[in-house]
Image (cartoon, rainbow, N blue to C red; front, side, top):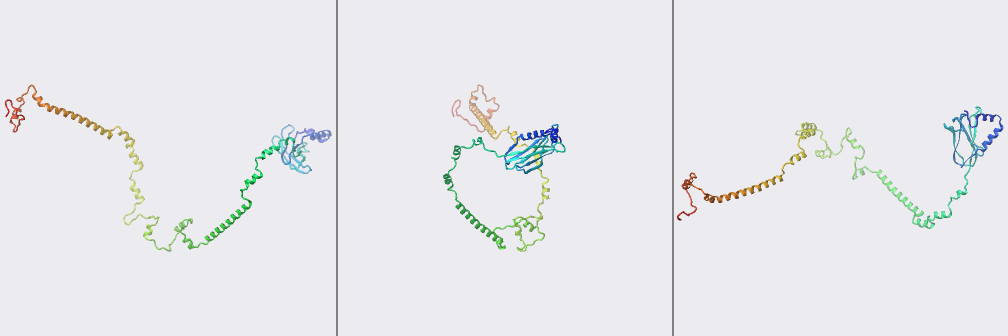
Length: 370
């Protein structure tokens, strides 16, 4: 590794014998400003390291830190680095103030590129300045800030309704006593439950076996089971049972219809699709309404009949009146006719005189009355 922090040739020359340059080098280290930190701070110590051609190097560098008393705190620990040539080490400082000698070492003496950098630092507690004190609160500020706070009398007045320590202790004791009593009662009840007899179980008003998992199904599905009491079930017991199944369609006379019988009987029936196909050509309610809307309604027919009757009655009445008038005026019209004869009317005269019964409606004669 070739490091150009101080030219390689100069470093080699210094290592050989140049006392003047050694003094100059020592003086340059002396005037370098030392960093000051607060005790307990976490700091980063680092340096950019380059080769002779000024390209960054990532060759290892180590760091050593000593206490103000000369004790070793960090002993030649390899520093972190990145491609920019920056070599760094993060360190949590002690809380003791003082100067901490610190050195960064890169390269080797044998390789002729040894570099040792002084990175010492000082830990010092910051002192308060007059400028810092200027921002402190004045007596007026303190008075203004504390005036809204409750006074001793105010606190006494506010806390007086609160329970005292003695009252709280009494309440806690009472609660504990009640809790102990209730716990004893519950424990006794549990102990009593653990000692239930079979008679107490069967004498309970409400009891159920259905809450015991699969107990009921296990009993009924058991390969061999026997009822040891209650005798054989009667016909009434069977038919009054809540749920029962018929396993055979045979009856004493005939048999019940099976699913196959029902399927066979209903297969010729029209399906939903068949009904839809058969009824699709039929007029819908909307179609019937559209078709019958031009037709006369019952009200229209009644109105038309009433109109016809009125017209007919009016015309018949007029015709009857005309005919009656003609009939009434007929004799006068006949006798007033200018030319009239009874001999020219075929046999009307002989018919009149030959009639078996004939009546004279007037006794007036041309010469005398009878």
